[in-house]
Length: 366
Image (tube, rainbow, N blue to C red):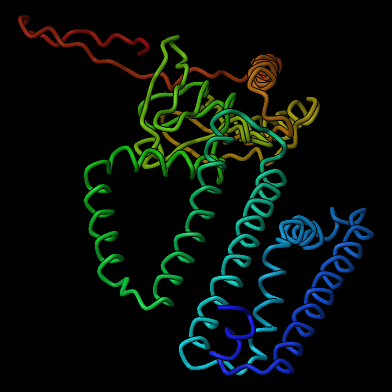
């Protein structure tokens, strides 16, 4: 059948056909020109992409605009002008959904990749390692394939295929697989959580209720920690995240608290000299901010002063050095003031149980 007979069988006049072709050609020119102009405008703004993340995302997304999709869209616009019989207008509707849906899926695929990588690059403090890269890749892959899965199911449904049973089967199969590998999946998602939330990183010194050590490696299933005693501890990611983790590397300051006990027989006027002198000692140290020095306990066995100060640097060696200096100078202060740090003298009465007379009292210290 020649083209004239084909148009005649569809009841399409030559005038209608010519108008449809003109509409398709004009649509292609306009759509292609609009995409080109918009991309050029975005290229001019590319220098400001760091301040305008949407510009960077749109620039990379529109770069994936398919000329085939533009051509198909133009042809469909031209076909929609034709006076087609009922079976064909329904097929044109299916082609509209397929063309626009496929291009939209391509755009979303690209936008997810660009947006996710930009987010991880900014919030990851430009610290990339194998575990972080793999975790990010898996997350991006899962999101992108979710887009294509939804598009495929929507396309099948648009073509009149019942996808309810298929979706139910996928759900049942997914539940079965999840139950079979729930421990592995739990550790995998825990690894993703560590990569995104970053409660700790390689090189951080952490402490959990059972052990303390330096993080050496964070994998997809386990985390390896070098304990203080030297051995390497391997623990599942999911189990580690269920514990309370103390990350000492992220300490900005360090609070130091200790007590000084002196003999309860110390005269009040002499005990009153301790707080100002101790305050002067602590305030004289580098990177130290005094909180308080106060008499807090008056007991029959001792008098106790509570001392608290803060270090602006959380370095552990600085803490040990500063605390040693404070304690040594506190000892020197007590010697200069004549204050004893010995506990109260106690009297012990010893009786001779075998003799007729009570033993003579003896005095001593304990």
